[in-house]
Length: 350
Image 1 (spheres, rainbow, N blue to C red):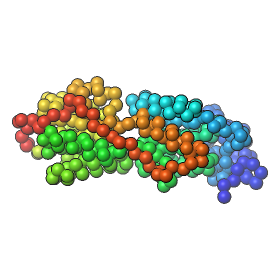
Image 2: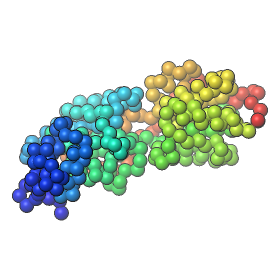
Image 3: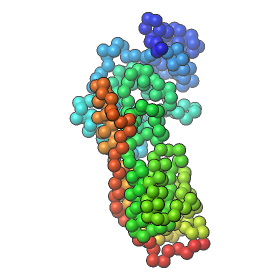
Image 4: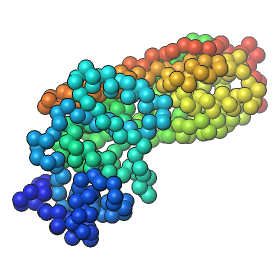
């Protein structure tokens, strides 16, 4: 049974004794103060969770029904702009104010610190939109314990059962990208994906394989390469593909950022896009239009995903539970100039 800091539950002095700190220090952690060492914050947080102390705003009536939190990994990513735009527009329509948390500090273990959650609980946010790779089990539990509704935007990993999320139709996107290359006559088509365990990567590669199967093209395991979502890994994987005895003539790349690395590797080998090698990306980020040639890519509707998540959150704040836990928005192919027909004189096998 969950206990609170009121009568019948553990007091701050009990929490402080359990964590080996003073009562004022425990109070600082509960109230989201910054002037606490990370190691001390972690000890107090673990004690709060272990004892079942529920940190509430100053009375339930202090909850501000017009305030929601948007938690981003970073504002520096070009993906953050469309997410902010979508949330801003939907929040304006709903008459809500949004507090944005970004650039979350990391603990020594590489996980986000609890400070941002302490702050949103203390200020009485009525709901939370989470655009992070994922939350830790204790963070999910803390939001549930405080009865704060939340929606995940484009989670990297499969959320726990019952968690509401909004994402893109990644399988459909992988299918569209590969079908486009097949329509141009390519049969030696590679795919360069991000981390194997990421949900979106598995879905995009599954769409790629489905398109090949429908066209009667044999799936070649050596044409499937994994790495990070950055430019450097994509550069390495492209060079590996080009060094194969029978290299591909085209590649579906699972992010526009990775396509930068593909372009660089092709330029190093003095291969032109799309004259010698065709490329299709995924995301339709601003940089996809800046590349030369402009990148044909699959548009992931980030703004629409964020707006949909906000509208779902508003329903949950009103006590309504969505019928489905996962909402997927359609992807579509944006044709530019990085994909063309198979070269008349394709590179001979090595």
